[in-house]
Image (cartoon, rainbow, N blue to C red; front, side, top):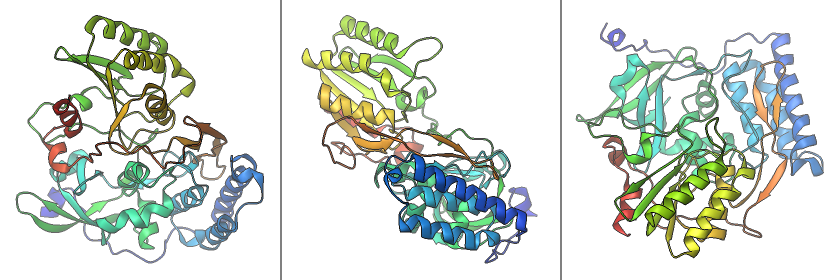
Length: 417
């Protein structure tokens, strides 16, 4: 009864194959989804539309057809993501959640990959006691191996921020756990967790519950176990564009989405920033793009103009990048470095200066899953082949800093101002 009080389920032995129905209709339905997606890749993808699909993708498709009868629907979605990954960019994907006719399942814990390991940062109400625990293994797989095992399933533009961005979120989903273990989990998954202050690992069983409708990868939240106030960079993440002075000589801007809002266009926001710079005359302007995963890159010109003018007038411009800096925000990062000569600090972004991007939606008819095929090329710095813009200094957030609500990146910038 002690486990029941914790909201945990009795141990459920994983089986090698799914016991879901392998009816002809189901197999035919998933095969239809596969073919629709392969056809979209062949006809629409910026790179793949120039010739026949590579043998690697055709072989993966044959593997999918041969095995989908024994896979859960969750795993079928993950395996379609594996095929999407072979296109080689971060905008070509099959969402493992929010399918119209297939229910996805995930663990009631939210993970985050820190410099010192993967930890639980949030949980459903019955499991909040595990917030702050280090995750040592998922379904018997040590967490230090999870990133390498997940790489074939992660559509991405690079192996730095692109991996940090996705792995800790996707590994909570049943389909990816089954894919990296080649086992079927009917109701629950064992996790090995270490909780302070005991510092002793413990194995507990956690249920697989229906995942809510998600619109994308969730952004980071403040620590839920710290008594300290939320750090500046985590106080107001939902707001698209906001800024405030830090003392008399520093202006801090958080740029969280490349988009207009009902209240203000990005052009108007840039004008508001320009007026604030003119009133304060800061020696240091910090632009924090750590939460910015994109939007409409056609809106960027007014903001880039303000930053370029500020730098030409002798100010110091620092842009903070992170694992969520992606898509149109990557274009912003590249242009800020190339045109406004900004210093880049923080974590590597999830993309590179020049990348295949743009989401072109594809609805899969059987599962109702939402997919995307990238059909455009974006070049923000001509001939730049870097896989990412290397931050200097590079600072990967530690669990100790996060759970204490500290921001080591902003602290490092302000120490060097």
